[in-house]
Length: 294
Image (cartoon, rainbow, N blue to C red; front, side, top):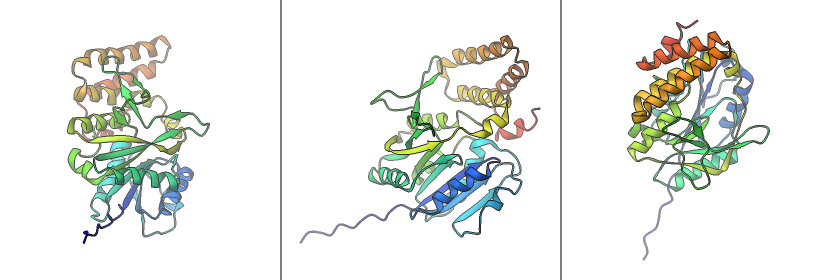
């Protein structure tokens, strides 16, 4: 008599939605998640909360709102939600998604199926499309000399997955940790990808899962401070993974200062320099230092 083969229990998913002053898109994103049968819990992390995000939702036992009094940036905000979900032993997989992104139920199913179907995969992400139909890979390739980032070519494995949307196995976080909170915004997903590779954790794009990702309005609201965020993040990344390419990376930052100066954007040049200084010995968490910038 042949032994019966048991069917694996489907994974239970917890989701984190990070937002900053974007009530309408956040409400729409959460509505799609809470209706999915595999998504047991959703945590909305509201950076620099003023109550407007929380007031957009009716009470729901599967929905929690984490209101942070400061704008803590991407890594701290996402980690705040992940830590709560990781404390729930019933959750096996963790979806992180931007509040301005659209992921249908079918696309959630495709991500979950990809992770469930390959025990060796630690993290997966969908292909990305803009609302106008422009298509992007879920990840990117980093040039270790110029530090430019490009789209992978057909058949080329990315160096990282973009955290606009990722589905992560619990064991992946247990092995490599959460996002590095010394990043405020930018490069934290690249750094996580480098850690995955160093730990031998496989990750992959799921090409038949599609995320529609709008351009975030938070970037325009942040103005020239974006230059400080990106410069600080890149400088910190170089400290961690720059190796022999650190010199050319620093030259890239210097060129950014020069470009701002030539354009007459002196506030921008000052923000690049400020971020550069903060990244040399990035504070943990990074957002505390950024609160002191004008």
